[in-house]
Image (cartoon, rainbow, N blue to C red):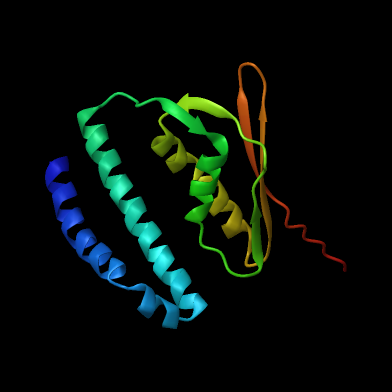
Amino acid sequence: MAGRVAHDLKNPLTTMETYADMLTPAILSKLEPKDKEKRSGLQNSIFDVNGIIEDVLDFAKTTEIKKQGASTLSILRLSTDHVETNYEITISLPENDVAFLCDARKIEGVVANLPNNAVQALDGQGKIGAEIDSDAENITARIRDWNLRWECG
């Protein structure tokens, strides 16, 4: 069943990916920055849906977690690359990095929800920041929304 669903989803997704990739540098140079951003968003969404399909297939197969060395900073970068923002929202990432063993794709899928939720909470303007701390046993990554709302009445 999962294989059939994956096949049915991948066919139209492949068509979308093919058309998105057909935009040559000459065509892209003529696009407005907003349209270039939309194309990038389309490519990121295609990448995300392909990952979801693979996750469904992995879940159906109940495969083992594929632990490899990963960078907390690269996972944060990947998770924020897929966040839809407007020009009044700033996302700042830390400079420090910590390496650890994990299934980076699965962790990115979990972490990606944090900045997405923070952007939705900002209501169109504000700043989102990330911090990484570690000790001998734990790594802590924080996503923060620095949108202060003051009401004077």
